[in-house]
Length: 533
Ligand code: AMP
Image (cartoon, rainbow, N blue to C red; front, side, top):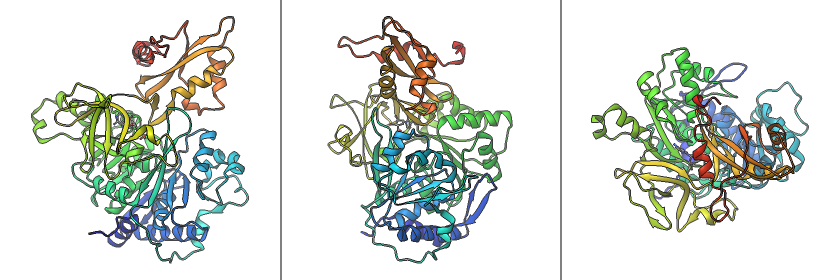
């Protein structure tokens, strides 16, 4: 009963019992198909190659990759040898990327050639990296001193003995954005990921099984693509990987051609797929369109369930929680409710998956589960982190054995969580975080700006977008374009505010703090189509 819960076991099980199962990977140059047996050989070779490069238990291997075959191979190869798979968000600006590699002291990086230009200017400052392995194709010559992924796989036979791995050892690392400053890292243990993966197989949650064809649209650098690749491979599902920068039309074709039964992505992605489906109705085998990462609007759920007849599953979680926390499933007695009442339940974040514990708290007091009272959601369980990696900010979030999520929710008597707001001052746009505080500080650093506030405003496509309010110093002037330009060096293009509004003053509380809630309420409809914006 005390045998270890490790990724090694999951990998061996998958390759032993499902050698003929298929992995499909879309590539610009054509789709690749291989069996789990071939995948197993390649993964062992990668593991052996990484060992030859000096990667041992506890060493971090960074990935800077799309959802493609090398990424899936790294998912298993790195933990097999006791290493820590550190998936790096390819969309972040340069200063954060530098921190993301240097802070955990990544030893080896596996990088898609098409993404290399984002890392190349930082190369000399990546202090811990001893080897860079490049995957895919690029018209540009390879930078000096890098290794080719396929060549290193060919140079080893993949035979090696697994190093001893304890279930409590770390197997993965993922960083999440903070309100301000550098991102915060979360380590995942073998045990946590094993139990989390088992949970994804439960019929009450996603029910991933050998009958499924699974398409992770959510990037594999976002909380391990919600753990789906680990569960899908372990349980022998057919895997479909969308490859570089997939568009809605490509995703729809893939779902149709490969008879995908379960696909997972943020609501923004499902919205684009819905538009595509409306434009060209397509017969799909989807039994579950899984959305999470931000709130799935009821209109989107209705579109899928009523118009396309595709069951829609709304889930909630965060980087600190591996991520699965709640899934919005109806209970049998809800079937007698009206369609609209059922829809309202499905649009909540759902109830807790087995294995976790949850409480609602306000000012350190419990908040009743009455569907109205709002408190901060706190979580505990075997796949909930209990610290940030090498980060003093741990003490603000992990208190008395509970993760304080920063999400404000009400909970019904039946346990359905309804997220209402968040205490963290950040904006989630298309599943990616933008720090309003960092934008404000950067705007206020401009010589013409007296003060600036950036708030999150609902957006029909992206969920939320940043809107900036600026008070110009007396006797000075500034244009939107000028201010946007001043932000461009520090922020990625998608992080820039969609609008910069010049106002005479920013509303403040009695103690002089920005009343951002007033701005958010006043501009709630700013991006709604009828507002003319
Ligand atoms: P991340 O760590 O990037 O996965 O972000 C986690 C945060 O995203 C949560 O703390 C929530 O604020 C938000 N989030 C995730 N899933 C949902 C959801 N289904 N509905 C609303 N917000 C969500």
